[in-house]
Every structure is written in structure tokens, then in C-alpha cells.
Length: 390
Figure 1 (cartoon, rainbow, N blue to C red):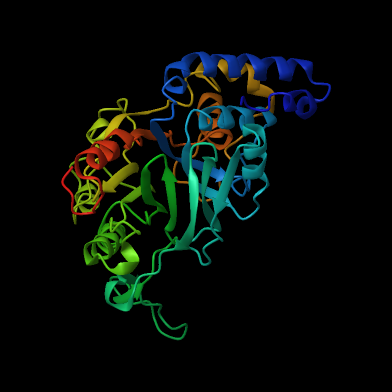
Figure 2: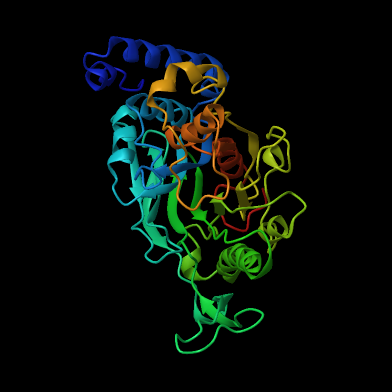
């Protein structure tokens, strides 16, 4: 089914020019992404991750999102079968609005918000097409056991009646859970069974103890799943004796392909598929925060493609500034920002990231039709055993 474009008429009410502009931009997105949409078939799964910036609280003062933005976001999501979304806010109306545009075959599963300043009031969610993806009724937030807690260094607060220490407050080590709890859901698409974990890991700062904590979170997450998978317990095997496959994806705040953050992600047997590894799908200046990594026990697993969508190629383009001039804030409203936008051009480029995002969707294509392999084994042996060579 196509997206529910009939809602445009209602959402724009008497704003015919707004409806025209929105429809024109959707057509441009559809034309550019037609090759990606044409890849959708019964034999593969198109899996993506997208951090949709502050979706949608307007706590930074740059919003709220315009009606057209929800259609553009939905149009891009509809190119895939399953999308992990980060930075969903406590109020789910924005996410529900996008799912309504996608149509009745689409659904979502979301976490509760993580409390505390590190949690930032965010949820994580999976948006998926039920005609391609089956929810295997298993979901949960990842909680580390005592022996695997993240070691973080925190400043010791000086008592009010004590002078400020010189040269700086002391640091003490604390063992903590993830700042934002990663979210695991078990899915199946075609013959391919897998557990999918989405994460929005700690950023903190670009150096020092905060960077160490970020690296520790990444390393802790991959070790948690590696240990679980390698244990190969009865709980980890299906009825045929096959061990669960793991995919982790989301905003890992990876600095670069050569950085320690990436080395942590690629530890304990996790692999970033070759199709999206390094800078292959990124333009000059794109960050490497968003990643997809896999740890497979199924030898039939195969990634057949991958890429990244440039979300501003057809909407909120640089040339569109005059169209939005009247709705832009007169000055940068973000409090405490160290990079205040001062010119109309800079304000527009910042504002549009709260209409769409400051991240681009990253995706891979996974083969899911193992029927010939199954039939070949059955024809040769008359039975299927988990230890049978592929």
C-alpha cells in the first residue's frame, strides 16, 4: 500500500499553497528514492536506523515541526521494512502521526523514557511493516549485571561550607548502567530470525573521562551480547537448535572509522557490514555517529547492499530559505549552545534539523530467503539438523 497522502488535504486545511509545496516535495523524494524503493521484495529485508532529532518536544525552541515535515519523514521511512528510531520523546503523538501516514500495515514498538539527566526524556522505537516483519513477542531494555556495569568518573561535589578545591574538583569512580537503556526486540523476516538492539549511547564530551565512558558503553554493549550468544544456553537456541543472531544499530556516537569508539564497536566478534563500513556511504563532512553492527551464528546471513539517505537533497534545501523566511526564529533560541547561529542562513540550517534531523538514515539490505538451502538439505538427507553443514 502507498502512504496515506489523503491526509494532506486535512492537515493543510485551507492552505492550498502549503499543500502544493508539500506534494511537490514528496514527488521529488519519491523520484530520487525510487531505486531504493524498487529493492523491496519478499527475498530481502531493508533495515535502517535513524536518529530523528528531538522527536518532538520543541524543548529547544526551534519547533514545533510543520505538517509537511511529518510527510517527508514518513516518505523516507516507507522505503524500508524496519527502522530503528532514536530520540523519540515521551509524548508519542509525533511518532503516531508518522505511523498513521505510513498506513495500516505499519506498526511500532517503543520503550519507556529513561529517567535522569543522561536519559534526556527519550524513548527508542522500532517502526516496521507487518507484511514483511514479524514481532516474535520478545522485547526488553538492556540492564547490565553487576560484573559488567559501566565505570564512569564523576566530579565530587564540594560541600557548600568548604572552599572550592584548587585546581579542580576530585574525580571518583562510579559503576553505572547505560545513560539511555538500549532496547532489544526479537523479529523475523522471511526465514531470517534475529534479535535487534537499538541504542543511543552516551556522548558526554570529546575527550577525557566522558569519552572514556562513551567507549565503555559501546564495549559493554557488544560484550553483553557476545557473552550471551557464546553461552549458547537452552534459552539462546530455537526449537531447531539454532543460536540467536544479533544486530545492534543506532547512534553510537562513533567519532571516525579509526577511532577507539569504532574499535570498541568492532570488538567481541561484532562486524560492520562491508557495504556501509568506513566512509563508503558518507559524504565529506558527514559524521560517523550512526552505525549498524552484526554478530551472526547463521552462515546463510548475507548483506546484499547498504547506503545512507541525504535528507536535505529534496526538502528544506539551501535554495528553500526564502520559502521559510517568515517562520524562522529571529535569533538562535537554543539556551546554553556553544555554537549560536547568527546569520539568517545559519539559523535556517540549524532550524531545519529540528524539522527533519541532524542525522541521516543509514540502511542495509539483508537476504532473508533461505528456502532453497533448506530444500537442498532436506532433499539430500531427508531431515534437518542444526549441526548439518551449509
